[in-house]
Image (cartoon, rainbow, N blue to C red; front, side):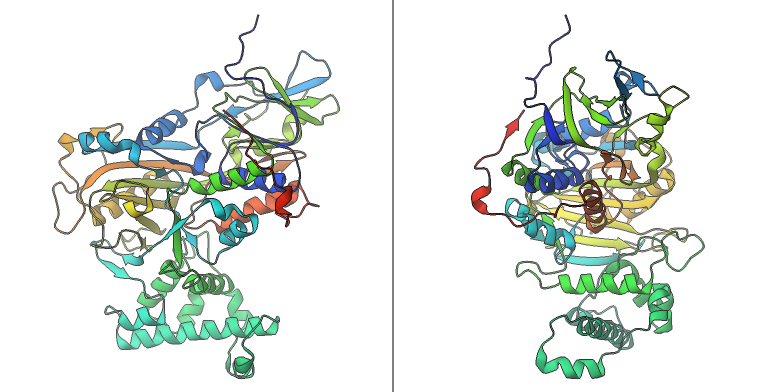
Amino acid sequence: MSELPQYPPIDPTTFDLIVIGTGLPESVIAAAASTSGKTVLHLDPNPFYGSHFASLSIPEFNSFLNSNSAPPASQSCPETACPSDDPNLSIINLNCRSLYSDLEISSFSPTLLEECSRKFLLDLAGPRVLFCADKAIDLMLKSEASQYVEFKSIDASFIGDGDGALLAVPDSRAAIFKDKSLSLIQKNQLMRFLKLVEGHLRATAASVGTDVNQSEKGEERETASRISVEDLESPFVDFLTKMKLPAKIKSIVLYAIAMADRDQENKEISKQVLKTKDGVDRLALYQSSIGRFANASGPFIYPIYGQGELPQAFCRRAAVKGCIYVSSVEINPNLEFQSSGNYKGVKLASGQELFSNKLLLDPAFTKSSPTSSPDDSLCARFDFLTAQNVKSKVVKGICITKSSLKPDVPNLLVLYPPQSLYPEQSTTVRVLQIGGNSAICPMGMFVIYLSASCEDVAEGKKLLNRAMSALLSFPDCSESSSIASDENVSHPVGAEEGKPTLLWSALYAQELQTTGQSDCIASSPTPDGDLDYNSVFHATLELFQTMYPDTDLFPATNPSDEHSGENAES
């Protein structure tokens, strides 16, 4: 007799959509499908919501990354489709591979952190914020997921250098005039450029019929100056040079406002050259985010209780619409196909069969590259479920301190543009500090997130270590407890005046993977290397529209039609 599953069998067994993983993309699609009236089953092997977008306590964080840094041997599967006991079915076995590697965790104050380790909520996908005016906020409002999450404002943004200096980003007229690091000429240059961009955006808005104050409309049409089509298609850095902006102003605009990731000056090594039209759109997003919400002092906001609240908000919305949730379930799915090659359903590790019209998978689920077999054509249809879909990596860091990088500023953002830390630096380093007022750590303590996109993990770690050395002081390493260490990295030891002392740190690399789909089966995207959620939401919405081309995304519904409670199993 086979061993009974450790959880009750799932009932019913047939759904319109089965979703495996509660990451943000999976949760948005589950909520959208449930809202449109489809029956959805949402599974997760973890005891928490969020998957790769979760916010975890220190013990949970350590456990998750250590267990996911190498795939367990028990999860290795055959490389090809294999026959089932039913001659009319074929099965493709899936692996659960690791998205993370090169993990280093060090504790410089084990006793202190042991006492409050469960009072932290560390973001796996950090550093990340939301623009107040971006499409992610609009989608949360439209879906009504916004009623399940609250936000705190990011108090200030800074540009950093290798010497530890942090200069405020002059992102508004008031900030420009108050900035003591800019000369009067530089202030005028930046003001003229922002006025040019504002005029272009107003002229464009007027031409497409966007509402403009009627008393000013005629004057704006006469005085607004549009940027030429030729300039809009040119590299943004070239347009800034054409506008005769000095290097300092260009760096602020490119990396602290337009949020360019790669070195825009060196087009030979930059794989992401920003066009002027995209740069102008990013400036517009930044400027329109300032002042949108009364309680947000700048353009950025951060979820109270951490980024893991976002997928949970969409999961709650899906549950209200009838989605069934099963967490802490052992998932090692086998994809079942009829003899015709049509997808039928999944078979869980327990042996239970679940049937659905469509299936959405967590990006960690992959199949090995197939070898020759009678079912080779079936395997080939799902080549997107391989590691070949990985584009690059992002190296992330998390630090815990007992003092802020800036006195009396609990929540702040720091950007290190290319070449600001050392001459060979080719990508931006982003640093986000969140304080206890966002309920992600005890009051009086701070969590600092760092990230840098890279093709080489060693180079990415070098970048983050340089940024950490510029911002923090390191205690005597002989007193630390380290899970893994890098002997090639050295930091100045001992408290440095004005710098927070590091209490705990983690460095790790995460693969960047795009979406994929074939027939009725799709794979969701991983967290990307961006600071905001625009690309993640864009990829998610495109995937939903591909899965359900005739279905509206979060159509308006009658509140009386909503389910009165949430369906959940655990």
